[in-house]
Structures are given as C-alpha cells and as structure tokens.
Length: 194
Image (tube, rainbow, N blue to C red; front, top):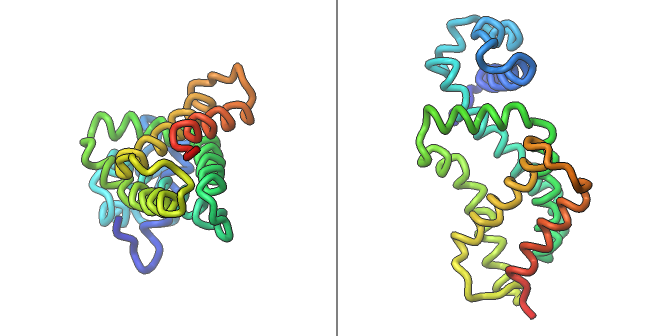
C-alpha cells in the first residue's frame, strides 16, 4: 500500500483503526476518522475511495505489524522451533490487541474483496516463512518431503485460527499457555524429523 511522505496516509490508517475499534465500522464516519487523524476530509479521499476501502489497508497494516514483531523477536534465534514459538506468540499478541479490527477485516474483505486480495496482502508473510522452512529443511530440523509453499500457508492459517478461537470465539476452556502449546506441538508433530 502506498504511504505518503508526509505521513498522512499512516495517520489516517492509525486513526481508522482506533475509531473503528471503538465504534465499529457502521457507526464510524469519515469525519470521525479525519478529526482523529488531524487531516482535512479531502485528504482522506486522496488515499481511500470510501470507508470500505480502508479494510484491505488495515489488514495489510496489521500483517506488517505482525511480521515486524516476529522479525524483531527472532533475532539471534537460529532454530526453526524457536522461530515457530515467536510466530505463535506474536500472532496471539496481535490477535488479542486488535480482535475487533480483525473481525472487521474478515467480514469486510469477505464481502467486498476477493481471495486474491487476501493472498496479495499475505504474500510477504508467506514468502518469509517459506524461506524459514527451506532453511530448516537444509539444516535437517524438519522433514524434507513437504510442499514448502503449502506448508507455510497451513502453519500461518493454523496459528491464526487458534489465536482467533481463543480471543474472538472465546473458546477459552483452556488457558492461553495450553492453547499456544497445543498449536506448537501440533505443528511439531507434523514436521519433526526423527
């Protein structure tokens, strides 16, 4: 997504996330967003054609935050399993912090945008994890007879689904630690090289 050099795009995006989290998409007006962002209403339309056009940008932004958090926290961690733990932690943290907006992104992207849009948003994340998986295969940490592309997508989808079940569906009959551990060990059982 294009970002302006004066930071107005980012201000609008940040304000949108805050206002929509607080009021919900239907009750949020563009004037609420521009007031919070401290920009003119016309400025909003330079970047977004409508309120609904914010949704893919918000989804993209959340994914960028997630991936940046993961990359920051894996520094110095070489082992695949240590990286996987960070991916699980960061995904659960972001899901907890932005659950309202995540629900909105799902409903908004499902209604107004195609699966191709989701795929495009997720592509940098998928590519990053594919590289991590290839390295783990090369280092004999995980099994080698797998489709790397599909495995990366399955891992990301599984972790996000677990985090969403915990925070959004409130399937909290187990503790957060148990949810994370079950997710980790399910993936480990699938990929572990004996």
